[in-house]
Length: 199
Ligand code: PCA
Image (tube, rainbow, N blue to C red; front, side):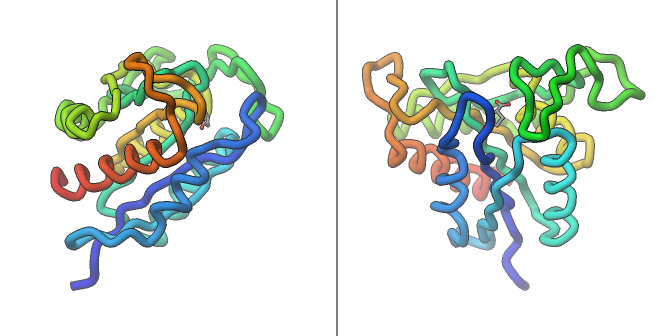
């Protein structure tokens, strides 16, 4: 049987972030082969609903067994494993299509504060990252921007999606270690390996 696909996504630039490290992570892991699973990467536009629509197109094409979304969190000093997606769009800066909704639902048929839970036992990923010396925390707030909206749409679409926010290259972890692109590649690799084992 052909290997199943793990669809890994990063994002392109957006206002305030000219060089999104998650685009480099997507490129670095594209084609990675794991037991029974192959990574297929894509870079999503930072615009709603275009990013979710692109994910839906890629899912129809590749029928992935799992999705790993990576996004950058500008103020973060450690890796954030997102446990919840929320039905709210409240953009601090416009997306790349120029939209800046405030207190708008992603899915108008549900309340603004509706939440969806990650379908992975993410405590295990936190442990795997910690064991690898990569500072991480479980988060219950994925923001109200395009990352959260993309995560929401993937979960609403029935995908086994996981969302991990990474710090900017150059941010300093609480233990004093700087985040380099190499360390972020390590984060993404540990996440993919953990997903292949946990699925
Ligand atoms: N971070 C933004 C969108 C794209 C990205 O990498 C966010 O946290 O919503």
